Length: 534
Image: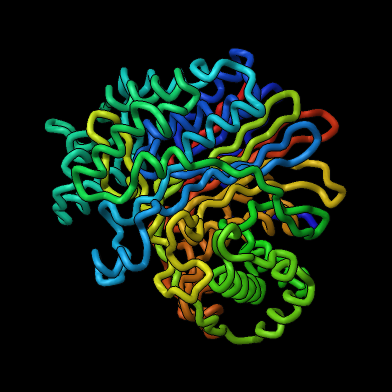
């Protein structure tokens, strides 16, 4: 079917042939493009963009975060899980002793081993073409020379500064020295630089990441943790390794939707799509009945994800069953004419960056990295610009739960890169929507916009979104309109209109024409998104 939009796209899709980089910050996209123009490939461009994003969007990611990637290269799709595990000393017993069994959002306790730097190095070792230092050079330049803040970045920075000031935790002193120094106020156009961040990236570039895990940087992280009572050690860092994984997928309307397997939550989107595959959806995208069914199916995906997803190295996750037709049939039985309560825990917030790259040879990358909640834990290693994430907050504290906190265990992870193919296995291109537990919901909506409703990448991203919160509570964007909100309410949903577009995630998408090699891209209008092309 052909989709006729009932609302205007703010932007138009972008076309190119030799290369494309799409992400949430124009400067980071330009960093990736410059690497392509120096002879690099899509993986080189992705690493350059990812490293630059730790500088030009520290409100959502950093050197001390995690990373996942899907890479189309050599005629197949490769998956990389570069997420880290809980330190050896972080256990449920330690949590009870320190925080009465509750995982805090900030401070040292929720800090798990950061995997992003190892992820950059492993991607480069397997697929990269240029020298690693050449790939990281743009990020180093941005950190040393400084750059002006963009509007959404500045707003998020100011919000985080206010939160950290109210928390007033002594271990956050270095965060203020680094990200809120005297004389700096986060506002559009304000200049920020970090010499420590630049020096850290130089050490990472010179050692292909080893300085972070077994060298000088690892020693600095270890020393700072010891000085402040943190549990992360040099031994934890030295023992970390990324994992190459087989992507999981489902087919829908002639498309194949790929995700990273658990410990990521991408499987939630696939389960929901499987449920919808057996349901006739209306031809009009914004039909309230169709949106009702999407929301109900997404609840079923979250039900399974929050029940079963964990680190498969510690607890087996039966992916085959979760993606089976029998499981979809069982979930479909819960879909009715009224909203239901899936009785699973409520999603929480997060902060993430997503990027997509493609080159003229057909290589394509879908990459996502995060410090989880904004700047993360609030811990910054002195003189380095390394802001450590708080991914451990996503562990379960019930020892009987598959995702229960345990030493050396990876937590349930919210960040999920996506990739679209055709049912015959040929590639279409990378896509992703960041934003905590909005991510699988964004994936479902973007996939349906593309595969069922025939939208181009920009339309698929621009289309107004909904978000399930918990129980029967749903938020919708203002652009969906009051009439549609009232219709969903009649179907039993507790609907509120959210005026902040950032609550609905921020996405990117690239599609490649298999006959001509022409690249078609869309970038998020809900943030400072940009596509750099060649």
